[in-house]
Image 1 (spheres, one colour):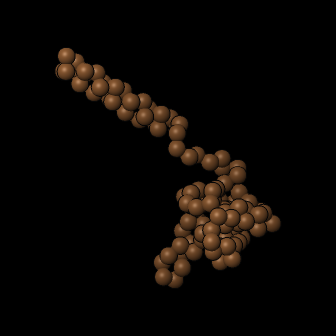
Image 2 (cartoon, helix red, strand yellow):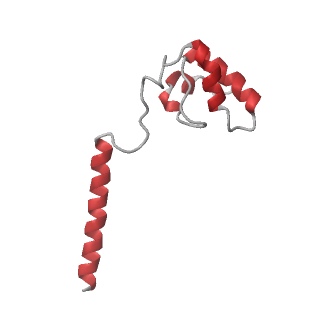
Image 3 (spheres, helix red, strand yellow):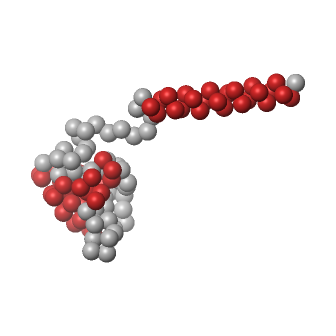
Length: 106
């Protein structure tokens, strides 16, 4: 009986893992953002202030965040979605570094 229960649970785990791999290979799950709204060149320069206000709205360092976000936005014409992270959506925004090698864009 114990072997039957163990085999049943192993089968469930295997099916679950298989389903996860199939869904991931078809692009389901995870965060996939619409390239019209996010990505390189998705903004006009006049849209930078509102997008940076959104991006910097939850930080305690609002002024420096806004300064650097707008600088990056004007160069890259892109601001990543969300309040933090997601920089891979905007390669220019993600790859612009300070002299010390740290990220320039918030």
